[in-house]
Length: 640
Image (tube, rainbow, N blue to C red; front, side, top):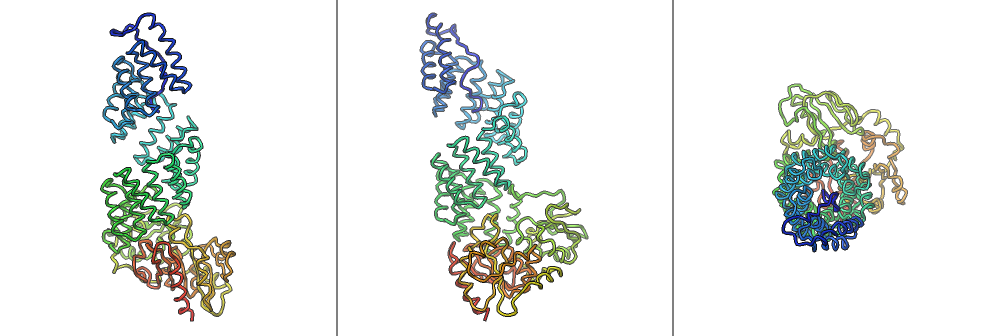
């Protein structure tokens, strides 16, 4: 607790202060009573300490130190208003003790009286200019007033005076984090933990940044350590739930939220996190209720509006979702997630004009930021300049938007590509690429840059102007020869399968299915099935169906592309396999959740992005049975 130590280091008894009603012999025992009170206070026996302080006040009603310490006890007992009154009485009795004013500032700040808190801390510093804890408390008040640079200056001044107070390092970290200076904030939390390895608050704060940075294993470890230190730390359970949800472990996340709410029943943030985790579980009605409860407790809570919008979105109530995102934006105009989520609904609805512009907000989300000193291209004349087109998300996203390369070249650009390594060989087949690097390699020199998924904005793509000519990818000769050498059957209908996306994908539970759900498909006569799924050997062993596993012959997406050339049809959920098949112009059936990713739009069986693709959609959230039934009927017709 900032600046609120409970035992005074230098007692002042003020026996001769005018107006005091106390006999000389009574005043003489005050030092003994003070020693007893201080001993009880140090031992944590607040009731006995309180009794001794009251005995002193019975002798000397103006005894400032006793008034102050009684105020600290009242605060510890959960009576902050009484504590403030007691400390004001202490200041009235002795206006020259900086610690009283500093602690008053701390208590006023806790009560939301930021201006009064700042004034009290400044009085403390007038009395004692080298008082580190007063600077810390003043920093807290300034932080609450939104004066972040001034708060940083106070914390830094406090640390110059006393660099070994872990709490001040932690407080500085909080402000730096709010200023998006994440690495500096991490350093502050780590310094606090070096000074106090059992500082649960610093561990909790550190975990939040680690979650933002997608360092999820480290975030979970930090949360669990904080809980080990403080088993009743509701905030740490809440932070744990966020990290677990990001790890696609929503069952555990829900349990963590519920524990947080047991410890702190009116915890709005935990209800919000619970809503997020329930959405990941596809328990959408419960998710909506949790988010609404969060907003009842904290009506001006933009994060809860966003999570409520997300749950409503997955229910298919798209216009309502947009309204919740708008409410979040009204509360926080620069809230990147609200803008970005709104854009995804707009794109899903085919509102490309607004959607592409709002989609640019994704670069303001901390985890997605990438900065270059060169200018970002939005369609300006290139006149032979070198332009870096860089991947930013998954393999499928990169594949989908590589279609724009000829258009960039036609606009006068010399294209440099920066892509995931699994796309290197396919990208090397693209005509006219000036240079190519994959993640982890040095980026070649360039004059302009554009994220691949910002190219539709640069070209003003509308629904009727999507560049949908396929194929726009070619298969490398060495990959083709490798695939040709595989033992393909010389009769029957060949079908490639992919049923699950990357487990790291935040929406993977919504889009992926269990292999067992495909069992009805395997009953179709005259069909040879081939698994395009990576790392699926254990799953394939669990089925009685005859499925040839192509993973042992697959090193990258070029190998998968070459294998697709030997298949009559690809059946896949929403993964990079769907994009690759579409980009190659291969027949592909894509199985979609009730409310799919924005690029598949709503209510149509075809894709404006991929002419050879057919879409099979859930009729209700989480219901794959009608989808599989539809695929079985269509496959019987296609294979005969």
